[in-house]
Length: 185
Image (cartoon, rainbow, N blue to C red; front, side, top):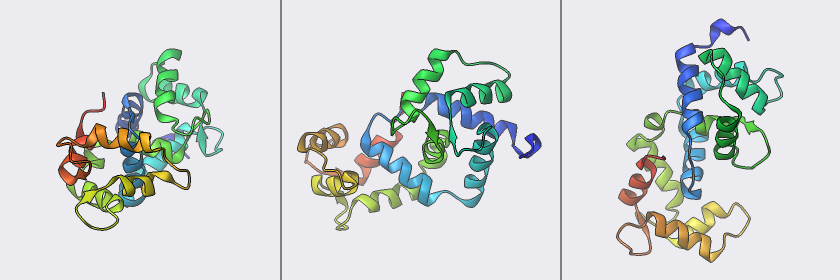
């Protein structure tokens, strides 16, 4: 992959999004992952794939700390210090594999404004709202986020507490959208 085919400003944007990524909430992580895998346009996907390949020097389909380090050097002409790289890795490496795989990269590198259009949020909300009631219940969260592992009652209640602004025990679209848009700082 030649250097020229990567749009530097897009790459810089992606790398800087990567550095600022925080997905401290499981619900948010799952939503970002869904949007990234299902709802991106072809152009959005192609840009990110190009950047990923440019940083993935050894072509193994995952980014090591070393590769990220060099990627910053290459696109920004400056190095991140080891601490910043560790922090970023902790936030982005959701499965704690020690690498950032493509799906983790896409989620973290996407521009939040692009990810969080009303249309994309509506689609993501519908994924959770299995019964179409317009509300996400504790059961639905368990079903979607359980991924075969059972989420503890406590974890589900924590998720709902974090998001359920009016305290009715369920999550409305407004509450969902608000949680997704809350600046992840």
